[in-house]
Length: 196
Image (cartoon, rainbow, N blue to C red; front, side):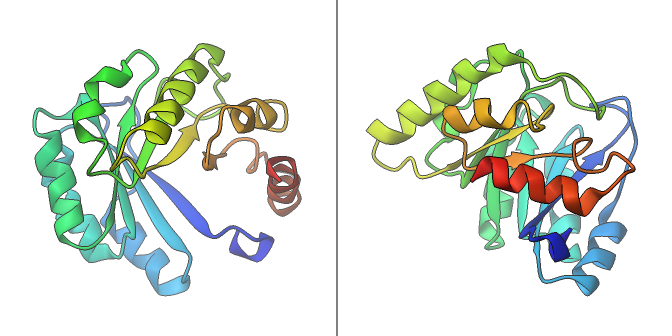
């Protein structure tokens, strides 16, 4: 997608435990790193992500996003990422309150709000998740030391892109809307135009 203008490649890593599906490991990230200079953003949908952080750093990840729901040691996971000089992001599922991550907001570079339940592509955008975007944008605007980018993942397409834009997101992950088997480059460019 970099030839279409994408500057970041979002890589979903699933362990078959935190989410039902099983997907890519560090070897895929290492192979991608050899092929592109694009930013590689690794989204760890895995239990105990702190145990895998170093492997993905070694593989060439530029940023690593971890779910607050997936570990009792979220601070440790984020600290490992930051100590390696990489961008650290915290992720919350649709059923998780923003209050669970407020103690972490000073240390993260990104907050990813899942706008579907993680683990499967092609799901419908959950509009109730936009209240979290508004709250996180408000907190960032009025609190010293909060300098994170706001990102959404799930159900992002031509119809929902204007809605997430209206709620102040900086980044949007699109999977099924781009890779629908027809023309990924054209689909990406249409979404990019919609995002402005």
